[in-house]
Length: 247
Image (cartoon, rainbow, N blue to C red; front, side, top):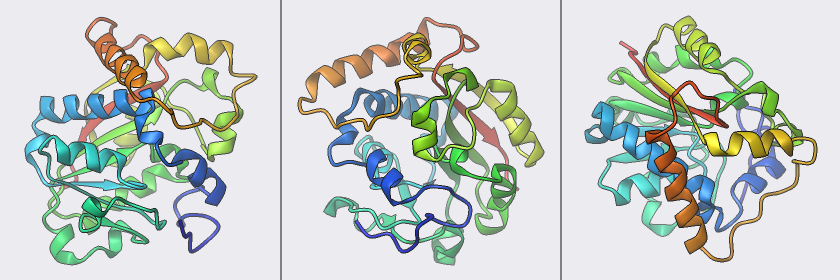
């Protein structure tokens, strides 16, 4: 895995070690990714974005892109780093590429944007969001996931180069300041809230990829079900939101 610069892009605080920790080989099998992928797909389908041409900005090695494409969603990705990606994604992930530098023919056909755990790495997320319309003139909506609740802040957030953890009101305020209108938002990973709060003083090590996938598939599926039971404003470890529009 090659990184052209210490800090992965001018907008983001994400260095080589942090990137390697986040995307260790096999990490896509972790229950967290299993549950988040399913949640993203459910929300895309709910708002009709699953039928659109999507761009994931900051896609890493393509965990979300790969999952969505397998489910029939037309999604491509770009990343400022040069991650190792599966051969099947070689034509749909633009490595070492700022979204603003994508070919005009690509940018002009993008209907919606995915920012999956990206905004917390940005020093100026409002300015970043404001820059989207100029480069992506056809985009009208964005799906966003972010880590939630400042009381869950731990050494892990420091290690990952986070600037902030969000609450629902804070995310709404940033979106509105950038000229976007919040369509819907909610907490998810509510079942992780209490364990993370209790363990935050000791939480900071590297998360190892699972050696056996099936337990993580079961746990991930269970975490997806909790969103059908637990109210949206009950605090969780993450937030998902859809906002419009860029025109």
